[in-house]
Length: 235
Image (cartoon, rainbow, N blue to C red):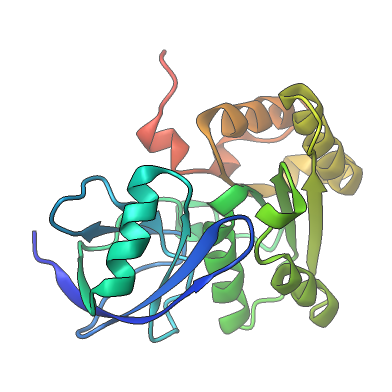
């Protein structure tokens, strides 16, 4: 597999122990909003990250959740080294995987799943799309909504973008999930069947959201998620 060399453009610590890393490929690096990349670094394995920038930008942006030994070591490595290798972009969680429509698009994320939401939203803005975008970003604490100001600014600046921040510091999973579903249905109860969705989070979160929305009339074929490929349900 041919790799692409990318230099470190910048690295910035955000809130919630999340780091924004921006890499500048030295040669053309094609990708579609919603895809992921893999860093190729000696001593590390399985460094897959969703690309948080849209294809019109000159750099590849990643959001890395620190806190584990592996992620902390990766951040330290990136701070020391001037460049890394990137495997070709991959992944099917892109809007061209869905039926073309102007119906509302639900962008549902937990934690650093926002990287995928950001890429798709910015790609839509770069294309001057007026399609309604509804962002639902859930986390255990406000600090983990590390780019909430940006998401809220989109909603202030563009009439077709709506942002909901859902925080559940002391809630159990069931409460957190129900809060998310209630928020979605409060906006789309009457036309949920015509909506499409991109869902970014753990397999538990993604399948729970899918099942709950399908119960209310959502078409399961109109949701895309990387989870469906790397953690498919057993038949």
